[in-house]
Image (cartoon, rainbow, N blue to C red; front, side, top):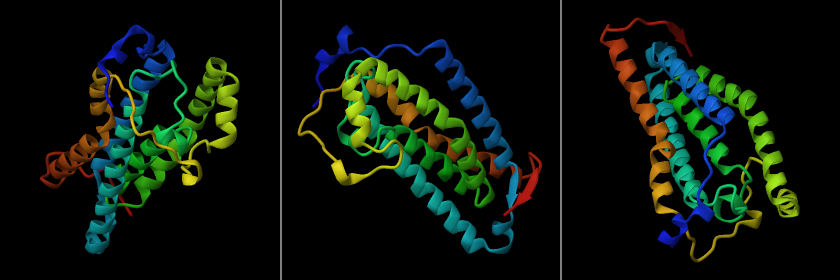
Length: 216
């Protein structure tokens, strides 16, 4: 259920801190650089085992679709509530960090769309190194905000990988439609990244940009 009354100041999502904005900009810059390098890479699977390359690409699109769907689902539950109310239902009953889990799927999916095994492993490794610290810091902040309620939530809900053991979903849910609309573009970013990757690969195959690497 979407209720326009949640546009009130009480449930308005606070702005990002300076550190969060800097981290977001850095992540985007690194992501675009890696995407450009990946687009300039020739897949050896495509050259020698085209059917397997096609399978990798199709699997990548499946990962991207799941990631975008999951991110939209998370945003619906958070829109207008972040840092105001501890959300423990829907995707947040499966995992304390379902948005990051879906992002990990999206990152791996983009890697698979290169039709290689090298890039999904590389992207997954970078994610595994970069994000655990962010997740820990957010956990500390949420504990300061919500105290014992968050401590109980931590005891019952896995930190990252989803578990349906305690899945719960309300019959109705209130969300801020303005914030939810704004989040949709960010939530579907992996679709646009997959399209951009294909564009870069097309330019490479047409000879407009060079082959930088050959990997499996």
